[in-house]
Length: 163
Image (cartoon, rainbow, N blue to C red):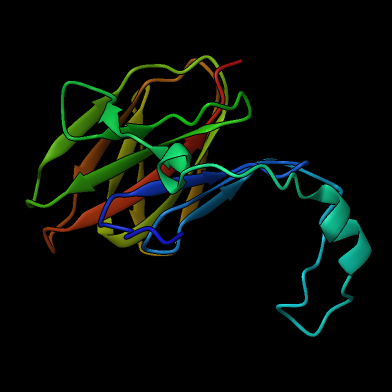
């Protein structure tokens, strides 16, 4: 079976271990795990017996693994909420200089990676300038605001868990 992967399509892959999400622009979010299984895609140790034992071999349609996006806020943020308890991911794309977005407080911690552009993150009277490649932590129960920078593009992915 094959499946066409479109822009903003998200897949959730659940093995007999920790699930992970794959975004077409190569954003991957994995649950914390101390049981990494190498499949031979790098020159590191290949643990083929462990890999094979971790697969479920349950056949299903490719569409079963697609996570449909939903609005996260009143603005432009998109929520990808897979059917797993470990995490969800919010995509924030601000295209206009000075465009703003606000996120409600989340009951758990979150990590955000900036994948395009630059801007400002603000919370409780504080400000942090961010740009492509930056990663920042947001504590539980903290509302945050995002503002697009001078270049007019800001894309971020915020992985979080509701505690």
